Image (cartoon, rainbow, N blue to C red; front, side, top):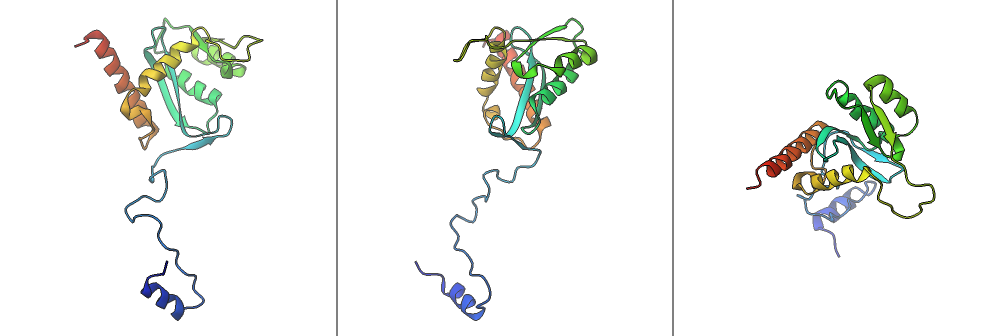
Length: 183
């Protein structure tokens, strides 16, 4: 393939300049896969994921009580503190939470002292090497599946985490309204 004649002439006139690379994409196509999105994003080295994480607290029916969206480079324990801080004082009858194994350790003491909540860890059985359904853990996973059925939440389209949180609330409102009045 030959270069455009003007490019060749320009390169010959200025031999010390680097030759321009030919365009491999259409001029309207964005350069990065991220499409220039604003807002905080991060990389989670442990789960090998990029972008954002969602932390939610749901009741036993799977309905949303609190949500926090943050960059993926924030650790799970720090994200759990953020979502538990949103619960403090909002639900006086709430005193027991079930959490996954990543929430063990100092978070249990922090939740009791700061928010007045008892966090019970639902961990895998000691000898389990394959997938096992954990009691109470599937409630949160089911809620994430409900949210994933919403087109706007299936991918991370939003620029700001607060906008993502707002769309999660809108999706749960829509879900609850459909259950109250099915038509």
